[in-house]
Length: 84
Image (cartoon, rainbow, N blue to C red; front, side, top):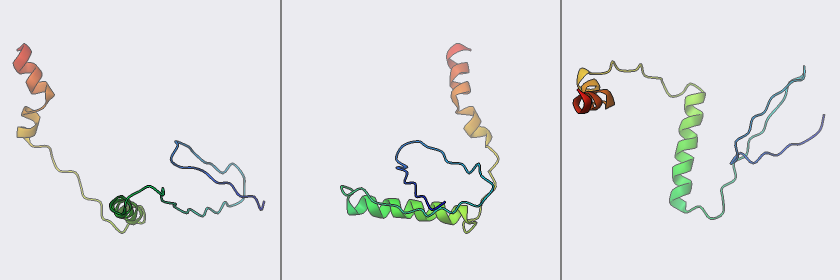
C-alpha cells in the first residue's frame, strides 16, 4: 500500500492485480521531446480515437461480406493461375 510503480510502455509489458483489493491506475502520457508538432497532433488523434472506441463512443460497424471479385484477385487465384 502507498507504493508507486512507473512503467515505460514503449516496451512490451503486462500488468496484473493478483490481490483481493482494488488497484487504481493513473495513466499519464509523456511525449518524446524530439517529436515534431505534426507527429504530436497525429498521435493525439490516434490516442483520442482509441479512447473513444474503448469507452463505446465510436460505434462498431459489422464486417462487410467479402465480394467475389476480391476473392478472385487474392493469392489463391494468383497461385492457381501460375500452377493451374
